[in-house]
Length: 255
Image (cartoon, rainbow, N blue to C red; front, side, top):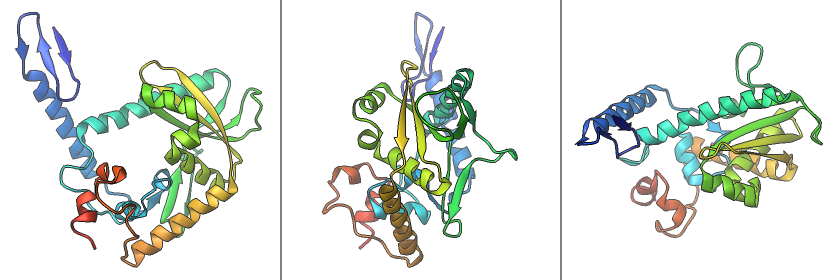
């Protein structure tokens, strides 16, 4: 008897019949995960992981806790993907430590390494810091950031590099390096389909970090003044708007 727990296509198959029970199991799992998410208090700060988002208006919506459009919040399937990413990160940590990298993911008190500025309104937490390790041509310490990607996304990263392929992640590590005063990041990406790993050494770029920091100030000031920055496009048909969870809020309900 096989049970398929893929989102939206679950079935139990015993060689003779298809049973709807697996779909109900998936629904129960998704309901449990979304319920857990609703019980968590929303962030009350602008996160470094989001500062690379190109639309300032979207960032103001996120920072102020504006609810996403109906049906646009993360569903159970997406939440499962997020949780799986943490599992893959744990594997990569073990593998790097086994290879001789002194990778630390928590401080002595058990808390995460991170930064908080602007009265706590702009914050970020890093995945870890490598304080020592094998001779790979860089000086330690180095910040460590990890992402688990599907094969298509991972291959694009391999082809084009972090700055061009994943500008949100590039912005994230630049801000981390700026505020934690570490000159280099080792960015690790795991291919979820093949478990292949790639590692990119990302140097600190002061000009890029300053631009991002100025952007954070602009977002915080706009939110505190109850103002919305200009839209990113002239119409809602713009491709970034089509994927935005605030498209109706922005184009139908806001000036």
